[in-house]
Amino acid sequence: MKKAVFIFLILSFLTVNAEAQVSSHKIGLESQYGWIIAHNPELQDLASSRPISLNLSSQWMKTTRKNWEACNCFHYLGLNLSVVDFQNPNELGQAWNLSGNFEPYLFRTDRWSASLSTGMGVSYLTRIYDPIENPRNTFFSAPISFLIFVAPKLSFELSHQWELQASFSYNHISNGGQSQPNRGMNYPMLGLGVVHYTRKTDLPSYEKNPLPNKWSFYADLGFNTRDSDNGTRQPNFTLAGGTYRKFTGIIGLGGGIEIAKDFSLPIQESRKEAVIPGIFLENHFLFGKFDFSQRMVKYLSRPMGYQEDREFYQRYTLNYLMGENIRIGAGLKAHGHVAEFMDFRIGWIF
Image (cartoon, rainbow, N blue to C red):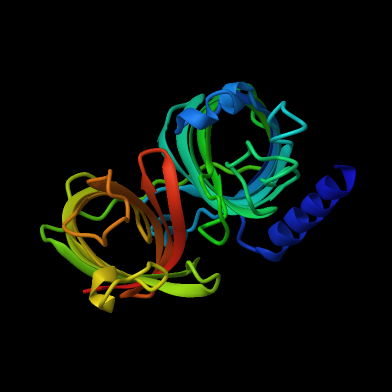
């Protein structure tokens, strides 16, 4: 633990000092308590434990207009190091998480502020599924897995350099479909902590650009590999096209279609059987160059034996716009609370 914290602080120190234009930097320490969502009856007993965690964060902000225009808001970028103890050492063990985060302010007053932190990273799991020694833990099957989270936060300024912070985080850990079983774990947590500013400056005032009175169109391609019945890894592609329009400074609504081609699925006669089309409605949280979207997708057709009891699924994506048109990111496909796989995405804004 001491070695991990030391490495984390060194990385944070080097990053901050490499950013000559950093205006503010803060370090946070937070304790969290939560619960595990049992998204399958078989997991009900295993999910009865209550996870606790300790989270250390280092975040920095630039206040130039160029950085403000990245999301039409002031925002922090940072690193998080957390240790989650699921309080079931024999079956669930611990999760050691290292992640990057993006945290824009939603509103600010003299002493109060609210923000929304989103991020992703890697998780090292000390206990995973084993058919003989740990058969009930179908949450995790790979020691190195992926972490994604979203966390609204409320902060109160105690002094110029200290803040008290409360948070609610929704966390998801899975291996992205790289090994089975891959039910993944969803665990919300309540947190309380303190924040210390090593560097702090007053925030300037910038005028927001008017909302565009038009629809935006985009196309994106998702890619990953999945286990097939013959034990090999096979590619899985998802091509989507959609449109949305901004209705507030940060919210856009729209929809579109997506078509998946999963080469890992068994077929009877033709590869056309593994084509999975769907139509979706989508909400976008738009922070300048960052787009966190949530799709509700209706299956139009699917191969025999694949998700036969499901009519809908969700896809959560986080994208970053590079330049004027290209965006890159990651996505998660899920059926309710059950994650199916994660993928990497590249897209184009027209």
